[in-house]
Image 1 (cartoon, rainbow, N blue to C red):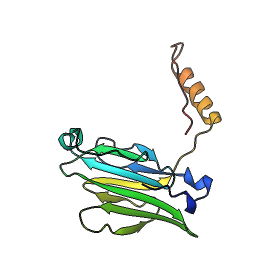
Image 2: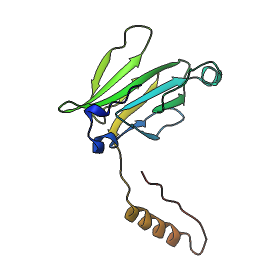
Image 3: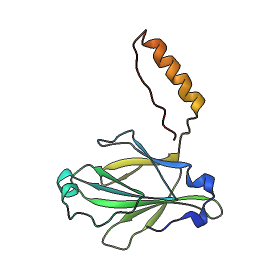
Image 4: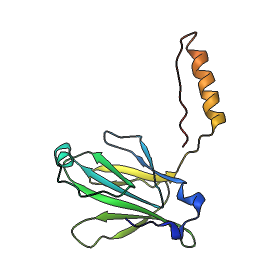
Length: 148
């Protein structure tokens, strides 16, 4: 997958995510880096074969789900307006479809939406940590805050 950053400002490169709305990873969000994300869907058997995939690009997620195996790309550009493109990669010529943010779509049984990525600052994490410790009443626990 080629880098799509010629169409994107640095802020937009890190502003979007795909949210899975079904399957075993329901509710998980994955960052769309450099304006592109490749998603591979398949059952456990097809995904587990060592020859199932050649070398995968860095911006790839693999979702074990359903009986069908396939893949699609999400491509984000700003030429000049924000455009979110969905491309299912099939044996036929891939067809590009334009999506709106938060539009639910289903491919190979997997539902998902592209959305603006939530940003959590250290202030929010500190508040969450204080609330968690207060609710635990003298129970010692460690909470790590991930930079998103």
